[in-house]
Image (tube, rainbow, N blue to C red; front, side, top):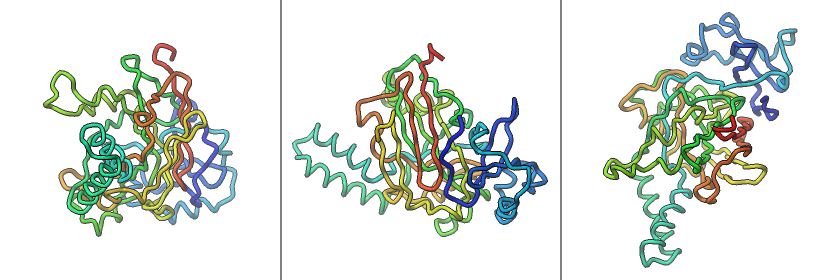
Length: 322
């Protein structure tokens, strides 16, 4: 499908389908124009992101010629081609406080108020002295919202987690917090789909979590539809919202991140280089299906939006019906 709500920035990057091919495009308002290597000034998107010349694209966005197409008439797909996907877990303060407080209330004699205060103190201490928690996603799971989300038949508890995703620009390896933002090309939207009953191993509880099986089925990282340049986005203060069939489920803001964007980039870059075009997911605010005790079903429609980055619409189909 084509997303009707574009980014607020003067221009953005997108990828769209043209027959059997996928082309890179420049989006400005309600129109899109193809970007070949000559127009882009680089052989590929990731080459461009390694040393982005946004002024070049701004000049192209201001041109009026017959290369533009109506945005509503093209089928957008994922705007990035990452080689690596890193994901930050338990990174929204309010979300984690709710989870910890619920567990404490169920398993101790603390009152709900005492449990919440205890959990808040834990999170404040973690933010001050702790480190981000990362796991790895598969680039093959990255798709656009033009692809229906097929719900695997091996579970009935597939969940949503809408997230702000950092798109890496210049390679980042062991960078400091102070220098981290120099390595951000832009931002996009990712819905991190999770199969809840596969998160924890039942056969070997000592091993702990199984992020490979719970998060990496085909299409489990709906991404985009736009890559918005970092200069036009304040990543630390963005509203994040997800509606399920028109009902608001998630409603947060990135100002609630325990570890902010520079902290995430710096920590993630310490043991492996982050490459141009890679995705670094920042975590998800409260309101996923686990909270609501409502999981994804055949026919569900998820509408996810992040302030300034546009809207993605993901349609769910059961595996046996797809």
